[in-house]
Length: 222
Image (cartoon, rainbow, N blue to C red; front, side, top):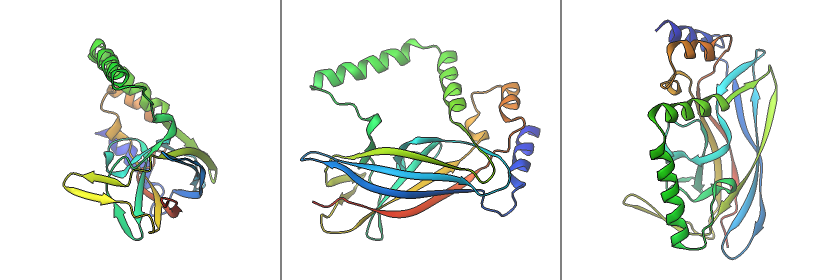
């Protein structure tokens, strides 16, 4: 309890000041063919305070905003005009896409992942989660800006479902992209011992909260 209180006190140092800005700088078509369209996304994070800040984030791995709230990723949200498109997986980060020559090759890959997970002990899986947490610790100095570039891919599929709700991406309507980050700290420390938590959190001002970028048009037309 004392650890969490200290962490929250550190966050409260900023009062009502907005500590971090996320902003899309540009989004343009990199190339397009019959089966997919690639976009190059430039965005930045700026420390708006006069103190160094620390937070947990994987700044290059974008996932749909409906993919889960307890993940340290950048979320994207798509709009058709002013209406949010709630379907997942419309666009993907290029580095996360795997191409398979056949269904058999795909099945073999899935089986290999399952085998790897089943071969790890609970302690090993816990350590993998810890390592991922530590790799995603970001530090930004006072008033510093960090720039990021990501390649996004749309497979040109216009029909999507989210449960019972169906979506069709209209060719002639305008579409927009928006980024979100949900910064957390103690929520992601469940695999750490109390001593490990103290070591991770010591001498750091972790910021928490939900931050939203500007909207920018994305070409999902013909």
